[in-house]
Image (cartoon, rainbow, N blue to C red; front, side, top):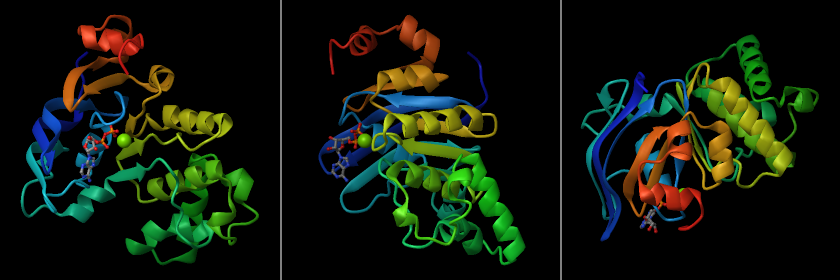
Length: 253
Ligand code: ADP
Ligand code: MG
């Protein structure tokens, strides 16, 4: 598969003190596709995802080497505007963390920080992004009530809307459906399949069925090493590495 890459990782190493969490990772993440990072617990999936957003920083015994280029720029170079990089990416964590404010203000939060003042514009942004996250119909009559009153599944969609409202290019999801009931998970998955027309989406998942349903491209990590990466059909149907085969068939976990 030849593709245009959106993120280019070269020789990335991350150490947490003595723990060598990512071992010389090099890969390209395709533009406007869904990439799934799979592998057992503790293999470095979250660390790799966070490195794309520079949420891994060389502080408190953490060391990083190698490069992560987003749109051609190495985000680990000194002097890089971290805020600008992060604005390109919306991050969904395992559990939704709505801000302690109303539904409306949660979605308007980012745009306000970026200087949108007009009430009309904000209303428009809030509606558009709640629709994109398929939450609008459920909340349109109570936009000024606290976000904390929503169900967990609704909160996760709210967090997606909040992330989309800053107009990112890349959506990062760290096991974004793990706290959700099956119905809510399905809604998030459907959103991702629609959003990939316009966004590069990267999700971490340890649910192989979810990776099969969603992924165009698969990255398999095991104990900090990149074992295999490639188009989902190839990795799942005809893996090159014995270890990938064993993981897919549940021999190793
Ligand atoms: P995964 O998401 O695949 O479960 P992680 O990226 O969270 O894996 O972790 C990879 C390894 O790095 C694990 O051994 C974990 O214990 C370790 N690790 C992760 N974060 C930290 C941290 N902040 N400090 C020390 N060790 C960490
Ligand atoms: Mg993790």
